[in-house]
Length: 188
Image (cartoon, rainbow, N blue to C red; front, side, top):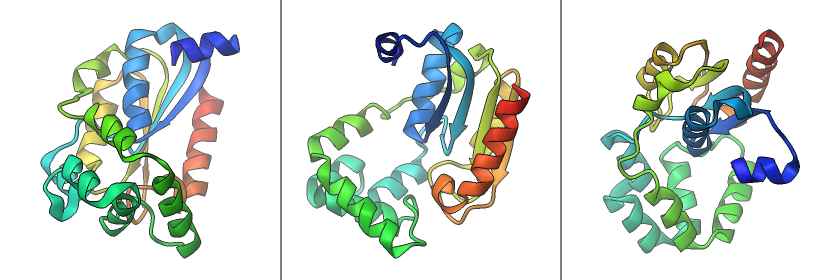
C-alpha cells in the first residue's frame, strides 16, 4: 500500500478499510503512521475466532476445504448463506456471486491464508492517528466485543455501532456508515 501511495504521489490519505481491508489498515497505521490522516475500520475483527472460521467455512470445516470443494462461486454463495455477504437485495446477491466467480480459487485461498493466526490486537495501542470503528452488531465474524476492544486499545478511537442485519453494514446500512464517516472526517 505504501508503494501504491508513492506511485500516486500521495503523502497522506484518509484510509477506509472494510473487513480484511481494516486488518491491513491497522497493520499499515502501526508501521507507517505518518502516511495516514485518519483510519476508518469497518467490519474488521482483531482475529478470526472459531465461530468466525465456522461462518467462513460452513459445513466444510475450513475455508481451504470450502474453497477447494465449492470453488469461488460456491464460496460466494456460502458466504451469503452464512450472513457474511448481504442477502437483502437479490440483484446485489447475483452481482456478488458473479464477482466472486471471477476471482480464481487459488487467489481467494491466498488471501484467506494471510488471516490464519493473524491477530491485530497487539498493534492497536501503536495507532496514534484519529480512528473510526464502524462496528456491526450482528456480524458472524466480527463480534461487537472485538470492536469494543479496538476502541479501548486504540488511542483517539471513536466507534459508531451500526444496527445492520449482517456483516456487510456498508451495504445494508450505507447511509448510517457514510454519515458516521463524514461526521468523523469533519471532526478529524
